[in-house]
Structures are given as structure tokens and as C-alpha cells.
Length: 236
Image 1 (cartoon, rainbow, N blue to C red):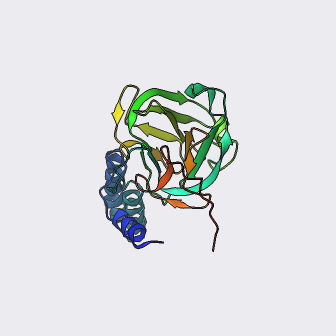
Image 2 (cartoon, helix red, strand yellow):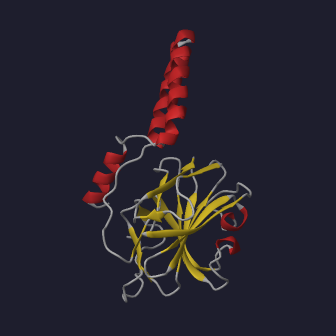
């Protein structure tokens, strides 16, 4: 892990919490007071629960690369697949295969999701569905999701899909159709662990690989303007 990544992750441990987390933390804190009146052990358990919620809902600031064409990681997590697939029909991205990069989030990751590119939200799509393990290959086709199609200034269309999972059963979007976004801007929150899929033009230069850890708004996944061949990664 680079020094910059280590520093960013350390800051994430002490960041403010997302506004959606206030009610959960407040409820847990109130329950902690009551629990201590009943039992010290029970009170300590609720202290742990409250601390865990503060940790889960943390919302750190990020250093976003400021260059046109870069596709940034929308989420903290691990890249579980990079491949060519047909995007969900609801997104309206056509039937031609596109490059998909999938990032899986555990309950220990920051769950504030950011836009991978700057642009205007051309479409916002919610689809009800199942709650399979988000890492499953069937999850994008069967699970509940909130999808966005972002049109860049160069009229390229990028799909970003927030997929619910077995534990994550609530997607909280903060933006909608017609909104203009800057790269790395917050677009929503997934509670409490899931995946985000990015759909890109098939000819795009991919700069990240399977198994790589990502930091939302900082890790560069691809470059829409580069002629560089897609990178090859190896584990050492």
C-alpha cells in the first residue's frame, strides 16, 4: 500500500459521519444510556454498537484528480471483475456489450458512493429485485439496484449502478435526473455492504485490475481520452 493510500485510509477512521447516519448513531447512543442503567455489560455492548455505526457511516473528504477523461472509482472496496457484458436494459445504454468494472464493498468500507465522471445525469433508474450476495455473478441481473447514466461533456454515456446485497437492503440516492455533477461528487449511500458496477465504452483504456483495492474519488479506473493499452496486473 502506498503512503498516500495509507494516509487516506487513516483519515477515514476519524472522519465526519454521513447525514443519513445521524439517526442511527443517535438511537444507538440513547439505547446505550438505557442499557447502562440495566447492566454495565449490556451498556458496553451498546457502546460497541454505537462506535460501529459511527465507523460505518464515516464520510471522509477525498483528493479528486482534476483532469478530463479520467474515470474514478465510485466506491471504496475491491475490484471483483473487469469484463465485457451487456448493460441492464433499464439503463438505456443499448444492447451492445460494454466494459464493466465491478467493485465490492464490505461492511468495513466507506459506503458513501461518488460519481466516476463529471457530467449530467441523463437517466436515474430504480429497479426492485432480490438480495443475493452482491459478489455473486447473478447479482447485477437479479438484485435491487439504483442506476445512473451520466453524459459527459464529450457526449459519452457512462453507467453507474449501485447494487443491493444480502445485508445492504437500502440504497439512498442524493442526486437525480438532470443534475450536473463534478467528478468524485457524492451521489448516494448504500447500507450496509454491496457493490457498484461501472459501464464504460468497450474501447476505453482500463487502468485498474481485478483484486485491486479502490478509494472512492481517488483511484483511477480508466481514461476515456488515453490511447494507452489497458494495463495488465499481477499479484506479488
